[in-house]
Amino acid sequence: MTDVYTLGEPVGVVSSGRVRHESEARLDVCGPEFTLAVALARLGHRAAYLGKVGGDELGARALTVLRGEGVDVADVRVSEGLPTGLLLRDGHVARELKVTHYRTGSAGSRLSPGNVPIDRVASAKMLHVTGLTAGLGREALEAVRVAVSAAKNADVVISFAVEYVPDFWPSVRDAERVLGELACDSHLLFLRQDELDLVKPALTPEREVVVDRGAKGASVRADRMRYDVPGWQVPVVDTAGSGEAFAAGYISAALDGLTPQERLHRGALLSAAAVTSVSDWQGLPTRDEL
Image (cartoon, rainbow, N blue to C red; front, side, top):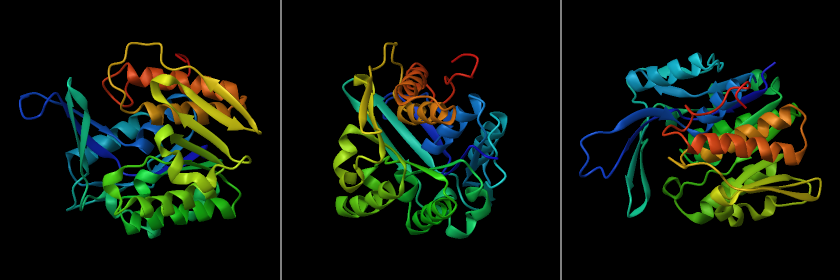
């Protein structure tokens, strides 16, 4: 049985200093669900990933990483003639990291409801979806909805990470409507401090709500109690991927039957590991390293 089934868009990522001046850059592959699946597999959980990649070198690299990390990619499809999506991360000491998305017309953005294997989702222990994938377009949103519906019908635990990217939505109101809907369907909700207003209807006492505050730590409200964990106590190289790593650690501990406080602790460990690496996922620990 699959422990966690997830769906999303694997993308290439080019990271550099200030792009207009730099002559060198770093190439990697990433995505919130991608990072989460790798993190869980490294901790010994059975993670399955659904997505589409282009028939190009970036797509081949994403598949190679997922297979190499032990993630089940039986449902990943290669779309010949379409490109794999790309991110450009432009860093500069004088301002915050700028991320530009090149996903229009990408293979991953064409994920559709017909690609979702209902039986596979229904047989998993948990389904994890994100607002980022829901924001890729109408078909991708319907694919997420189909997966959520399949999980609900089979009493599968649903985990939802808000992952709000303003550029993906026509308006804040559209984002609130869709993200609020998915949050209300979830049992386990992950979000950042600045995303609380987007999903207000879902912030009910019976839902397990995990708030990631980055360097300031994280908290969870579970069983009508609040638990907290402090922020990173490590040298920070790059914060990209820290939220997904935190969610993976929390979910891992939940699968292991640990308490909310212990779940927070494991989430914080994985998040700290992520920020000490230039990659979203390459610095994440194995079970023995945990």
